[in-house]
Length: 211
Ligand SMILES: [Ca+2]
Ligand SMILES: [Ca+2]
Image 1 (spheres, rainbow, N blue to C red):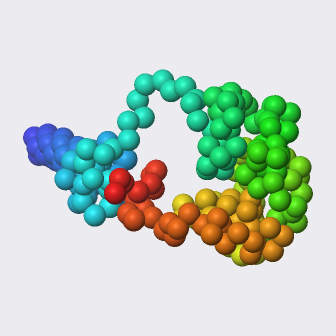
Image 2: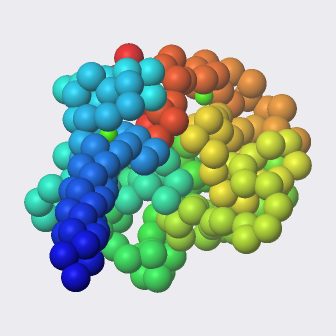
Image 3: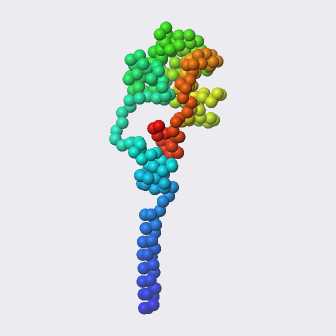
């Protein structure tokens, strides 16, 4: 009977040690360190910043607090280019389902009216008339194809999504000023900035830091 007691005691002690060991391992284990897990790990030099993979420390985005919508950029730059006639603030806070009714005619006047960006506009490289093109633009949402290539424009596919490196401003300028085959007004169909100066981050939100 005494022997059995020692065996039970040893078993109890061993089990306790096992639990203690497991707990310590759980506390110290590092599983897939990332730039948004809230702890300094991997090659980071601060919490979720620094090192080769995360944004430089001091440039982290602050997602705390309550936000209000101040900008609408389904397609970057459209509100800046077409909303300059006193309605940009209203455009920025209008829900997409109401945008076409509220702004299409204003956009068309801005595009091809007598004082517009391109009074000589007939159709563009997509074969769209001024009314058709500004109908697309005034619905300021980013279209996304559920299958196939994701691109703003790659020479074949158009507006099937957007990759961060897509030159969306040049595409917009081409469609505004390039005429039916994209070759009109060559000095107006590019902003002269072909790519980002800083590499994109490899982790969410994937944006490049300031230059
Ligand atoms: Ca981290
Ligand atoms: Ca560009």
